[in-house]
Length: 447
Image (cartoon, rainbow, N blue to C red; front, side, top):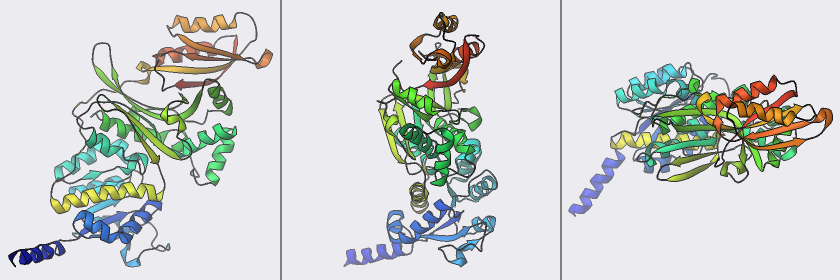
């Protein structure tokens, strides 16, 4: 009888748990899916969190636009929404820097946990927002900011917290991966493939952020900050886009048993004196067909993490889209809600290492250089001489065509990037070199 009374009391206490109030800022593709999942999966979320999860309101720009949600939940005043006493968690899906930055900071300072997918904001202001979260003793989660549904942030922050991460490299932009994959498969040029990506909805009307590497650079800054416990911003990331990649480059890559991908690379650089620095860079690169990233095609993303003890780990899946990204957002929201119900907080970013940034000039890379040359004796020796002067070793040379169409392709061994780029500059000044057509890096080899 006593046990029965206790069980009834426990049930009553569970039923009496205060609901967790959620404010959603933004109702685009991701926001609409977040709202739908919270609504459709209310019972499951309650069981997983330990309390009901209730949407208090959704901030939108246009109140007159038809939406699949009650009009009473919509507002065009996000500041008033997050100020409500019954809001515990703010889910920011507006994008951009302003007003998202001020709204998130206000929410954190008001004691509300925040979940965001805003990579552009985090790449610049993670330190400011993390400090505000720490001061208020609330959570700041952003799993969805880097690779959509793919869990990368939490493994780096928690699963590998006791290990030393050496390198994080991946394909983190679906638009550019779709374009390069399609060019590789069809032989079409960049402009035609970009247009097709736009027609299929993979590229924005203004694709600059994607194709010029800005999106991938923001994500690289976030990954590098977490992996190496150091503050890295988007401005610290060396960035190159894919607009100069040609169908001829992809065809030539195949002859070297490679393909071309836009890579985000974050690497711990160990100097000869034992000191350490962080390299963060984004550029299109050749990778061997045997590399795990070579088979990641279409709009999919993948991230490879290399750690001292865990070895190589690969995370693969949908890197964008409403439902996949909403899945990562909801995972963060559930974690924040559990912390609200049961007490405690999730781990915040750590910047104790404060490693300096290694400029691209100091990073050891390999180069692929394609050039049109005069078809006459001694040209190869002249070209090789420029590399020798700068202590850059040549790994392979391929000559194609003849006469006015003579083309020379050089692949180098690893050398400082400054020495490699100086070689390219010297080649462009040679009379025997008509034009340096393409310069790409080669990654993913043992060299």
